[in-house]
Length: 139
Image (cartoon, rainbow, N blue to C red; front, side):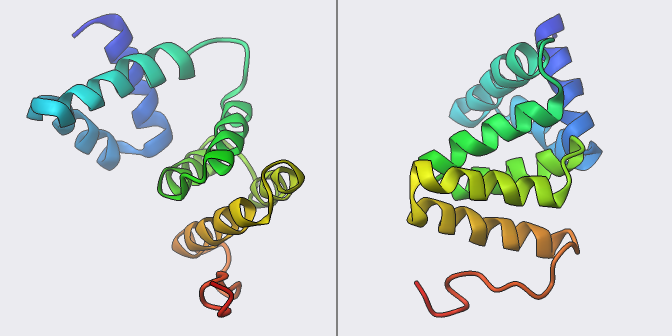
């Protein structure tokens, strides 16, 4: 395994934990399109981009969260809410990132992000009282 891939795998383990890192490594070994996509993520996203100097991991998380809100990629956004928490973002900072996106991406994108955030906060035991838009009957 080359240095970039190993750096990517190490970084992934640091921010996602050992269990998810093991699943990630297994994905590399599967081959096929799934293995190829996992390899690109390990080499490019984590080994080359996330591992760069210049931004702290928490700031990188905020950038990625903003981009994913704009793209309405709620499944991936949930992963990056978790990563942001692991990278030291406070729950309030993540909430503010969603609110900050509102005038730029609109209510539907921000509402979808808010529902995803509520689900992650529940899973992490950070908020057990907020309801998603769907649960409030708005969607």
